[in-house]
Length: 312
Image (tube, rainbow, N blue to C red):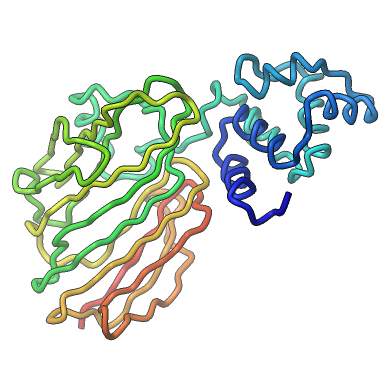
């Protein structure tokens, strides 16, 4: 099968984010190999695995855990023409710690958002678990900067994949600039979701909003939804960034400025965590007609990516 098909693109994404059983199932489909043929190719390499075990692995009914099973997974990568350790790392991350179920390895919110304590308190009020069962596979975000140089609004269209059964909501986070009044921030559910509970912390300028899906996702299911935070309550804004707990997925960020308030310089940046030095700097050119800059990250890494701008 051609490598530029939608099926091949889906496989590439699953190898980055997991879960293991869906990545394996996708690889088998893309390569067009029946399980008995895979078993034969493994046997030629001195690896003995039953067709039943392979079937259980791709269904998620069982998970390779024993050393001999993990050796079989490494051989599967060769048989299925996959990058080295691409399946194996979904079971045993590079740190050597065995992954928890089929949940992709994640960074904590505490490493990505400041102040972390305020955010944790808001999550506690919403009874949000540490693992919400979702990871983002696509996110297109548009930020509007108003005539007072304020963050006027941010719109998101997000694609998520469930890595456990029963997920029916997503908690979105908005961190305003200095002077943000969470009580005046408006949250709107734009598509394929409805607004649930909203909580804010005035001192931290943080708002969290529960977005309900009206459906319960099973592990591997995807969901597309949109939402808007309307702010405009804070002082001048000089940057916008987003933290990513999971690797993989595409992120598109567009920042558009009011014609009466244009920056003199815009740059992309990255950070490994909220307190780390910024790197990955790249100059961005403001488009004259649309008064906007943007960045596209094809495969995000855990950490922070954003745009910073200077006012004249």
